[in-house]
Length: 272
Image 1 (spheres, one colour):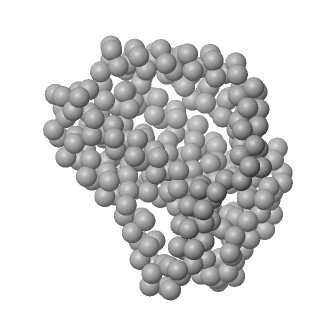
Image 2 (cartoon, rainbow, N blue to C red; image 1 turned 60 degrees about the vertical axis):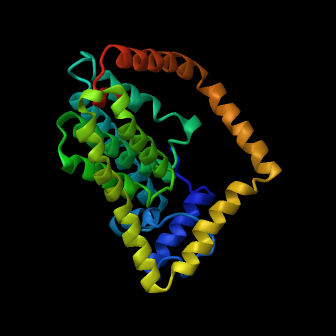
């Protein structure tokens, strides 16, 4: 399914073709308002499988399969000690993450972002389990690379960082060592962004990045038109309508599980 370009995917494809023609970042396209990670994903798909929307679909399918594998690993290594049927976690994820109401049949940014977010949380969970600094570094680095695909990876990073800083309240017996390593996590997240900003500065493309990405996204958020505001409300309503049963049933399970984890299983990785 999804054998088409919507307007966003067409823009990413055009940007990828510009990269293949040797154009530097943000030197041609005046329409892209995203970080450059998606350009290189589309570029890799075109280089390996040819310049076709089917190539993008193959990469999107691989990203979805990889996401399910990561959810399985997360469940096995972080939940299996307390949950006998942990294998249901990736099964339900595989089943419901394909729902058309959340546009999972497309090749949009979120499809490629999700593996980075799951992998980042998985590594952070391993760090909380064994305290090894390398997992803090890996978690931040993976989420930082995810921000190259879509800026919303920043929200996952901030949520994890807040959790690391609040761990003193939840699990005071291990707080001191973990809080000190939050700095590793934050530094490694910022490292890919610093390299990108340095490249843009020295290549002379920093002004275009500011105009096309930073300023345009600020304008996009601050000046939502009535038509788009109406559309977003309508589309959100349609998604809730289509997924109402899943939201109620699995939302109730999630709420019950979160409460049980907090009051009965006070392990940082599980609470994360």
